[in-house]
Length: 413
Image (cartoon, rainbow, N blue to C red; front, side, top):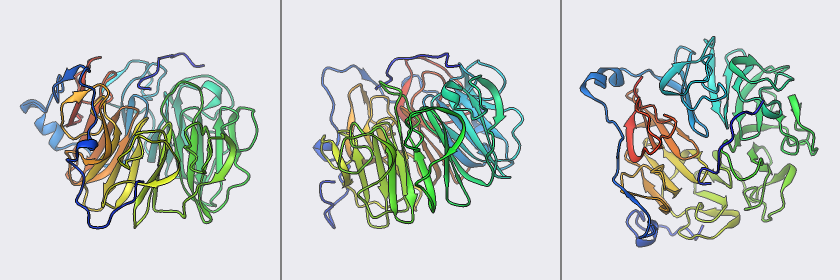
């Protein structure tokens, strides 16, 4: 059952061709003069000489995911590691003890993809089945009951899965047939109903789906939203109070609705916003100050992000978004009170970046955004994390409830 309750954690203008990157424009960085100042990297342990060899030989990853305050990864050998909060067993190592360094997920040897949600983690196995662990509130583990599990357990009845997405109050899976199955809290399963389900049920109006994205971060209510791409274009359903379904309204939806966008190559969903990248631009929709268009306006329909960068992948946190370029650079925008933007600038509680700025990390191959932290895996095999570290979710090996940094720092394996 659900045993951990925490408070709220935090919680395009036209793109002009040929304009310079707005990394130093005055309105790109908005901060209150009265907020407390924290120097960049405070209490953030960089690699010591003792740890240098461990970091330099860090494992190669094939999947990386950041949830509310937990981070997980799949290694090339099919095993998985998780670190951070663990009050309901979301690290999957048979305990409820949080860890400031990566720990081995028990019994998982053939994982190919991992997704970390709100106090829950799920992994896709090479044979097309799914295992989940952690909090089983509303049946989110997919086992037909509501018993939490500190080790991976099999989701009932799912085969031929190609992607799993662990959200805030639901989990969804995409199969090789292009159909979608969800389980968890009623009213958010995409089936149009209000009943919760502890086993996967189909989203009846979806077919030919190619990718899914879901909000994995907590908020003021038990509501979230899910989006994806199908042949006819992008879609969303769920909470829509800030226009995060991208259909021009603020009416929440229990079934998928079309997003007012022709489609793209990448999609990411935060708690109150969503973003779509295409070969021509990136557009976001939803809550104010999260769009990246240089304003603090709420956008009910997709609006171009003010950047000339083209992103091949996107990652969205509770109230920030990051994009990965084909060159391996990372650009982020949105709120930055915990340093989750990663630009190395001094931290201010109400800080935000209204247009994308470049994070201080390069040669990135995998990107993940948690509630108030961000992680990236590089070609050299080093994994960096930055932002909030209250439960050890940055993987430095040094916990502190006051630690937050805007400086990407290597995970200690």
